[in-house]
Structure formats: structure tokens, C-alpha cells
View 1 (cartoon, rainbow, N blue to C red):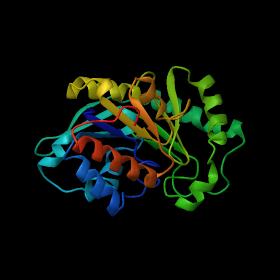
View 2 (cartoon, rainbow, N blue to C red):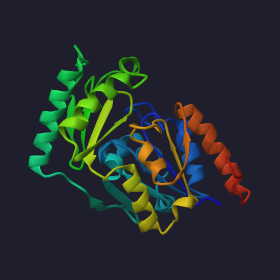
View 3 (cartoon, rainbow, N blue to C red):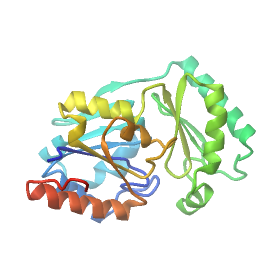
View 4 (cartoon, rainbow, N blue to C red):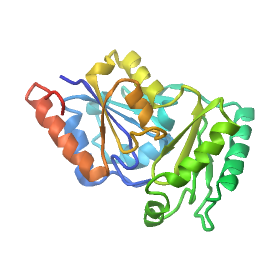
Length: 255
């Protein structure tokens, strides 16, 4: 029987930067009654509060939920309130180098957007994120920008040469995430194992970017049984199946 279900956020539980809908909130609340749940995403803590936590029931049930912002570089757990367990923050010098390199890589790729909505580079403390169309871009525009990840793969190629000491991964609809080397969703899966005392073989990871270079792929590399989904609607169906299996006291092999 699987004990921990781990989710990506944007593109998996919700559309990019959007809140989980009522149906997703109901499914997550039900899942929390039969298993421990964690969410790992490139977004920072305020995004989790707006997109997820504000829409879930309050109370003891949240003790089964772990939140890992910025691709697992931070870890929050709930007792009577939310507590930060760790944060792998950059130094100021590291941030400057990453930001300068991002600007250089975007220019060199030839894919700098002509129109943006808000800031394109965000300092999230333990992660620096480039959003090609800006932090406030409309969802429709974001979906059209780079659905096959080809533009961001080109940016990543340049970044890997400019800052090889850091990890560069692609996620969401328009994002490029930069973290410390080895501090990614694989690191987050290992932290979940250590903090919750749950073996990786007892975990399932669900995400939309489980492919080489995708920011969900390190979770699969960690050894977690992984399910790639195309959108939140597919995630809902997966959750329904998991609840059905766990509620019957069993987990179907190969689910």
C-alpha cells in the first residue's frame, strides 16, 4: 500500500498560477483522509497559500500535508500552524550571477518575448525563476508560448554552459527554474523520505513535466513511482483511482 502521494502544482493540480478548482479541492481533501500528501512546485510559499491552502478544509487533516516550495528547496509542515523546516537559499553573489546569466541566455536564444506582463525574473530566495511572458501573463498567452518546451530547451542549453554549477529545469507553462546543484525535486523526495520516515518505494509522484530537463523529472530519478499527466483534469481521475485503491486497503500494482 502506498503511503505518500506527491504532486507537482502548476499544470498538475491547477492551471499555471491559478487556484485549484472546487472539484480538485474535494479530491485532495478526500485523499488526505487515506494517505499523506505532499506538493512540490517551482512556486514560492505565497503561491501555495493562494492556489492550494486557501481552498482546503482547515484543521487536523492538514497534518497529513507537506508543502515543498521552489522545487523542494523549502519544506513546510503543519502542526497547529505552518512551520518552515529548512530553506536552501542562495547568497547575493549567486543570485546576481544567475540573473545576469538568465538575461544573457534569453538574448542568445533568440526567444525573448516582445510583450510581457510583469517581471520576467523572480528571486524566490532558494530559487531564481524566469517566466518568459512575465509573472502576470494571461493563461491563454502562456499556453501558446512554448507547449513543446522547445524554446525553453534552447535557453537551458545556454544556461547549462554559463552556470554549470547550478541546476536548470523547465516547468509550468513558461518557466525556467534555477536552483543549487542537487537541490531539486529529487532532493525534495529524499527530504520527504527522511522527515516523514516513508520509503521512496511507498511514494507516488504525479506531475506534467516528467521528462529529461523537466522540473518534475528529478522526482522520477529519485526512484518514486511516477505518473505523468497532461492537465489537472487527468490528475483528478488519477486521484479518484488512488483513493479507490487505498480505501479498499490495497494498491494495484502497475497503477
